[in-house]
Amino acid sequence: MDWVEYRVLTMDKKVTKEKNRMDLVANLAVILAALIVIATVVKNDWLAKPLHISQAQTALKGTKLQVPGVNWERAPRTLIMALSTECRFCIQSIPFYKRLTTETRGLDNPVPIIAVFPQQLSVAQAFVQTNQIHPDEVLSRSLQTMGISGTPTLLLVDNTGKVQEVWSGELSGSQESILIQQISSRN
Image (tube, rainbow, N blue to C red; front, side, top):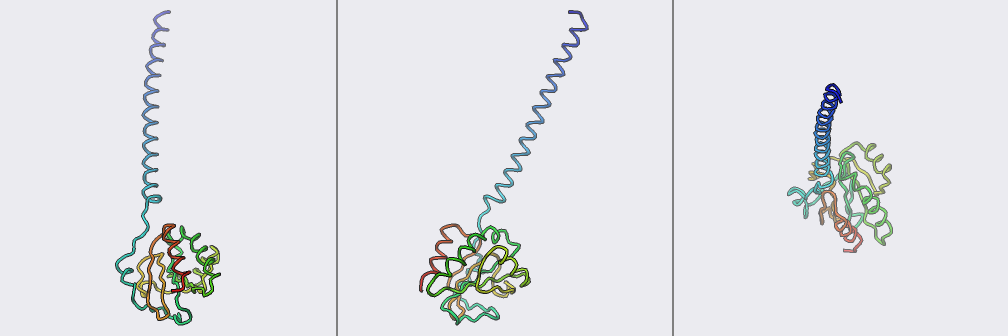
């Protein structure tokens, strides 16, 4: 082997080592970036806690609810579903709302379900129709004037308009079952 061949082989080894080192750094950078993206997604989407009932919504329990156009006396209890077409938890809870509006239909004395949206009535009606949610009535009202500060909020109201129960945010499976049991009971 002459001096030129030796020099070429030595340079090739150095270039290969440097290339391997650069590949390693680049791969580590990609892995780090991927971990940051995954951590952000997990933190923001999967670990996001359901909304807790705010003090304003807790204060709703026991108060008389004023909703223009609603006749509380038509049934012993009415369920108000305050939703928004732009609410992530409302959209994630669509399967529950479908189940709720379907399962409560078969009751001897079904509880009327009224879906109230802050959006225009045509937008709200399209939302429930597209998502196959079947409330008895769909209304467009200001949620703030009803004392509701966030969506989704579900209110069980008696025949005088007094709020008996308040559920807020995305409900867990057990909370959904409790809500359906309370609606299904004759109290």
